Length: 271
Image (tube, rainbow, N blue to C red; front, side, top):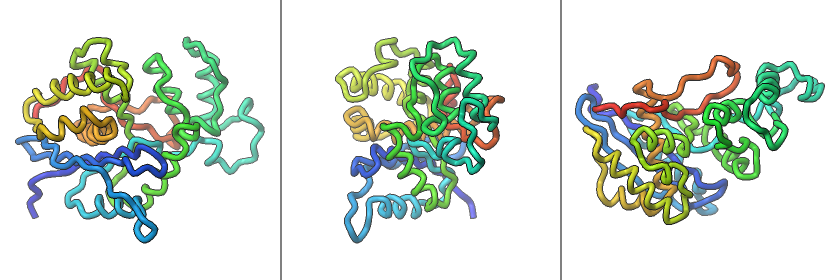
């Protein structure tokens, strides 16, 4: 059967038990265009049918689904997954912990806190080192732990391949490649500057050849950062299919997950 389009679904979980979860669906029509065909808030759950079940059912009914992405960690920190007898992470010989320790010993960045491989992952530290800034807290840190738990639960139920995506870094790298003013690169999500930054970003993106977004969806993303994040997740999945996401570092062990985010200074592909 001929497939006229392939779909990328991005999910912004927004919280461990939040009803602010958003779903964005990008449809790629081969050789023609890329369309943001759906952008909506996931249904609110009840005792009879949870919000997770509503989300799972919503995604499962989409045909020709290429990939699903979530803005939350999809792997627990190394120490939590480890079943070896623990000598302490100061002398641990597990590859990911050794690399994390070496990174802290040789890093040019000033570290405020000592690493903790039971709350943090090596990938998070490598990304922070790559960007020269502390972009991400640990997968089991106070801000991420509920999201991690929810994402790992959902991972069991999606049939399509599930990816971890960093929308904050996706926005920063794309905005920088678009040449947006510096004041918009780190605008706070819930501030007036955040609204302006999202508007400028989406205006530039909508000018790209072959990409179509409905006006009402653009306005929704300007007004709602969770809707915007869901869209960035779906867009990152598309870029990954075009091999335009950051390559996995050589010093990241195979056992460790590497999240998706766009390459630096990329030229947005024409459809």
